[in-house]
Image 1 (cartoon, rainbow, N blue to C red):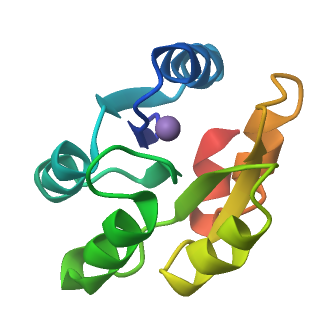
Image 2 (image 1 turned 180 degrees about the vertical axis):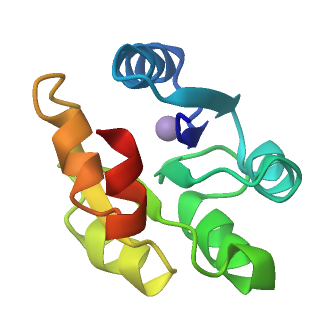
Length: 129
Ligand code: MN
């Protein structure tokens, strides 16, 4: 059974690339283009993993992360922030907001999947092989 990944990302090109990489690695992908939809889909779809862009319009990724973490049913879901290399403060703030880890942009297609998997608990990585 493939793992379900919710991508919360407003940039069409990044969304396209992340979706392509994940589907190529046999993940099921759900897409949200803003934080409101992302929070709603987290609750309704119960993804196994959430990938969260930090720079989102209206509601930023920190707010999205802390809002998701406040929901008891989402307290444990691995949530990986995708942060800008140019913004070093983003990383600490993402973790403080509840992210499990972070991956820096620009996304490296060769290493992205293994970077993401490095943040998953063993019970999930077992299901990816
Ligand atoms: Mn963005």
